[in-house]
Amino acid sequence: AMSNREKFIHAHHEASNFVTTSSISDIVPWLGWIDRLTGLTRKMKNCVKKLDKTLGDIIEERRQQRRFRRTKGREYNTTDMAVADEQEDFIDICFSLMEQSQLPGENPDISIKSFILDMMSAGTDTTKSVLIWTISLLLNHPHVLNKAKDEVDAHFGMKRKSST
Image (cartoon, rainbow, N blue to C red; front, top):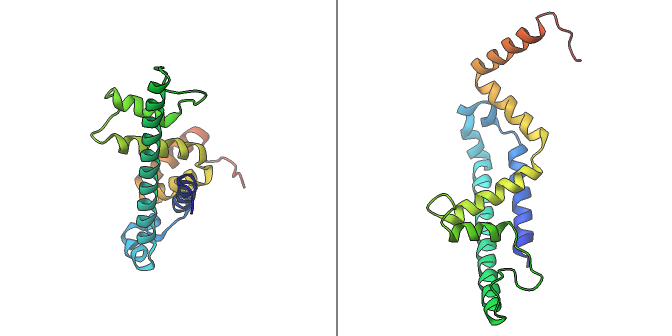
């Protein structure tokens, strides 16, 4: 059986593929029914559920490890949260903030999941993904595309040489 870590890596990779894959509704929103018909919408929803469950399992596993470390710390008569050579990591810091009521939102686990995904995505998001979304958004908002064209013309002039 796969560990939670392996499940997370697999689910995150799958979600990243959806982010970088263009669908017809990205370009023409009113054709979103095609995504539902082909099963793309269902696959995306299942991927999000899998990622959410895996993150929930990881958070719960880490919560239990934290409780164990605290119990172990009391046995050794120390107040240090990181007993022996164990170091606090990102999730431990989130738990500490949660205990101090400094984590935003009503459900701290949602905030922790969000932080984890932000950290992972920031490290793995690609230029390709950003460009795909930028082009998709510009195509879906012609008034913004026209403003961008006008700005390029204003800075570089109408007689600029093509980069091709």
